[in-house]
Image (cartoon, rainbow, N blue to C red):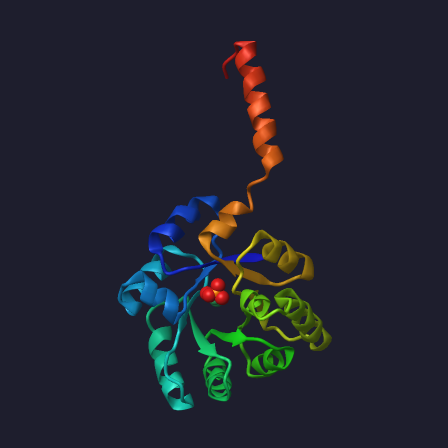
Length: 216
Ligand code: G3P
């Protein structure tokens, strides 16, 4: 399972690099706006120190505009992945860009039918939004499970990139279901290492070690 970092905060991504857990990065217009920085500048900076796909989202809403923006954004660095919304225009743009071997991430997916269309359009990644389905009283992880079955049924190469991940439970469920990738904010990735029994056990080991009077 690959881990992508869902942020445009370059310092937060850099801090995670030594862990070896950064397989890629996802951004969206909201995260870019939150960074307060120039879109191209941020994407190019991230692409320079991350080995792996860096999703950068187009903002045109029509097919032609999305294709034009997608080509432009794809030219910013070799590892840019063009993010497109799951609309009819986004699917057409995905089909066109994929035919030119441009990496694509179709985002804002909320149903298995949408995921099926994205795969048929040649998407490199499909991004189902778990947290936002939970927000409306559904279980977002059920969608990941449905898409896993659907893609395996037909042998689609499109990778399931579980997005809108907000909790450790989301991460665990995505891994158990078999999502290819999970994109999560830095704090969720870091929290995965924590367990209260680890803290308690370590404190006991350190206390006993101090009593032994030894050094390494
Ligand atoms: O990867 C998509 C993500 O940025 C959306 O997360 O928490 O705003 O639903 P959220």
